[in-house]
Amino acid sequence: MQKKIIALAIAALASGTAFAQSNVTLYGNIDMGWMTRSGHNGAVANMETQNAIGQNASQSYIGFKGSEDLGGGLKAIFDLQYRINPDVDEGISKAGRQYVGLTGGFGTAVAGYLDGLRYGIYGKYNPFGNYSVGNFASMTTQYDRAANAIAYISPAYKGFTLILATSTNTQTPEGGLNGVHSPALVNPSGNDGDDRLFSINLIYVDGPLSVDLDYETTKAVGYSDSRLYVATTGISYDFGVVKIGAVYDVIHGQPNSLIGGNIDLDAATPGLQNLGGLAAGQTYDRRNWFIGATVPYGNAKFLAGYGKVKDRTKDDADASKWAIGARYALSKRTELYADYAHIRNDKNAAFAISPMGNTNGAGVGVSGFDFGIKHSF
Picture 1 (cartoon, helix red, strand yellow):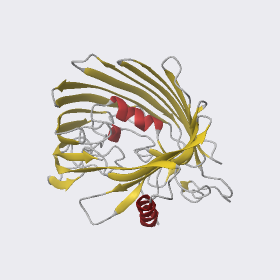
Picture 2 (cartoon, helix red, strand yellow; picture 1 turned 30 degrees about the vertical axis):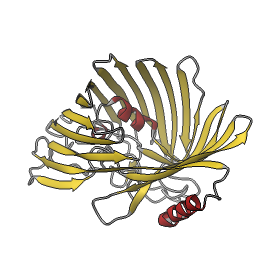
Picture 3 (spheres, rainbow, N blue to C red; picture 1 turned 60 degrees about the horizontal axis):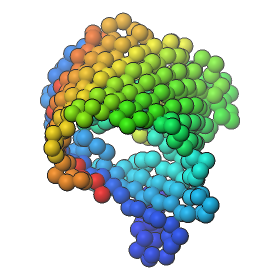
Picture 4 (cartoon, one colour; picture 1 turned 90 degrees about the horizontal axis):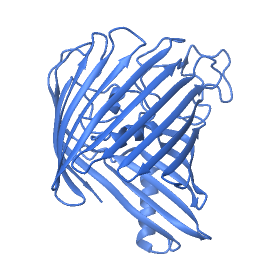
């Protein structure tokens, strides 16, 4: 179905008629490099060094986005993005962000499969974004993308922008989670089990200063002890010779125990990741923070970051991570990269190196190195 959609879009572009009233852009990104991961500490078991060729510093994807002028300052907008794994014979692997909506003087309203606000904050203020062995998003819990979502983005006013978002079920079609919760309801029906998300994000930008304040809550319909609260603050300042960014957030509540306890929004059955297999009714309480720096130097820039996870849910489960890296721009669209990172786990912590923020527990080892090339179009 996804391939058919893309084929139709390409055919329409070639014909030059179907989109006569619209502006349509074909865009994408290809990343390919080499990565090695090894080492163990805490609850990460000893294993052989793993070497791999693949995408490391960014997600590879192809997309179609566009707009149509409806008159009176009103436009229809859309974006259809499809993720790919260019190192294997997979073709299109998963959907990226996908939405349709309206924009105008009132702001922007869209609906579809939308990027998570908190996940975006992690990527915005970390010098490594949410990719490469240096990312910090794989150390924590977030919705990287939410299904069945609606978002409103206000016009900017004196540097302030407000984003309101909600999802009727972040993971599957509504009604699709009736049987995956534990303990299950006796006679689940209707929307029971749906993972509902509410988010509010206030952004302030004034020249080199950027600040984000984000608050989110999620609850499984029909489960009284399943509410989770997340509050996140991000800030950065560009001094010219160096840009400093930092994030601090708090996750607290009692998420209903989904089967697996560690699910990823990009997996076949998506959802909150890295919950650590909590027992039903157990309170989840974690503090996460990081600070990072980006130093530009001609066509190059140098990256460094350090962060820590403070787990109050269980003893001796804290962890820290530091990373360094470099980027070199061959052009506006082509960049070389190299990164190194190391994680230090307490006895009961099991964080491992993953080049993707949506790790789903797929990390390997506690030390990692990558280098490669990425090209956007």
